[in-house]
Image 1 (cartoon, rainbow, N blue to C red):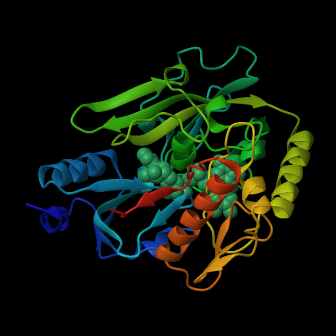
Image 2 (image 1 turned 120 degrees about the vertical axis):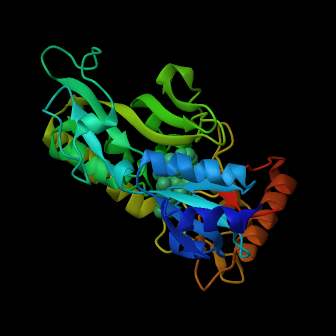
Length: 332
Ligand SMILES: Cc1cc2nc3c(=O)[nH]c(=O)nc-3n(C[C@H](O)[C@H](O)[C@H](O)COP(=O)(O)OP(=O)(O)OC[C@H]3O[C@@H](n4cnc5c(N)ncnc54)[C@H](O)[C@@H]3O)c2cc1C
């Protein structure tokens, strides 16, 4: 039993859509990465659990990706199954303020299995809970909350990726993070079943929520509150214009390194003279030194070499070991 047995069984039993040898460069914002043995798109929870059961039964490695905006995939790809969350995981519903709202896939909120009787909303309807599928894009979530006059997600405007990815990465800006608005996270724990973490059960540290590896985020509840729509709009515009000035354009995966405590990785890399430094098709951005841009058909090897050179030099100059923020997939 192995990788091929796993995806062949998934395809033959028509459990979910299987894309054999799918190039992962098509699924990362870096546009870098070789093929997965197979990419499997799961539209429902039962598809997801069956796929994982089969993969585990065949000793086939698997992983879940969101929008690939924080991942570097090896040039040789990933010898396993990459799972992407489809239809049912793109739903959302506001609970406790409006009547349940139809989500992206037009499925009503009851299907989430959540109820509205747990005190999740206040008496005058000024705050409530939004149940959001992990496969939904974070941008859509920001827009849907804004459209309905809620506040709380202004910080997330312009951050690419899926909602599930934002939860796992505790995505955010300098002041606000996903963990501050999440009320609970529903995960699938292979071999055991569904498990709900309440926010206080998780550490929510810098760019890490604390969801254990091997668990799949299915959906999360977020707290929303009625806000002043004009102010929310102004704050989002400010956030976006700051991003425009501070973050580079081009193919990238966001910040490469985590900021060391009390310092900024970008500042250290800039001070070390790396802005514009290039290896192969990968270049350190001259706008923000913590971004690497795929300027000309960069390979994962180019990016990795750049990461290594930067880490060594920063260590040599300042005694600080920069830790990657991006996730690596398919590297030995
Ligand atoms: C231009 C640009 C700007 C960015 N700006 C910011 C910023 O301001 N702040 C910030 O925090 N980040 C930023 N990022 C990084 C990135 O957008 C975030 O980390 C984002 O939340 C990742 O979401 P994703 O869906 O793309 O996750 P992916 O990159 O697909 O995955 C990231 C990790 O999460 C795991 N994962 C994803 N979904 C699930 C799931 N459902 N269950 C279990 N595990 C899962 C993956 O296995 C992987 O380990 C930026 C990136 C880019 C390209």
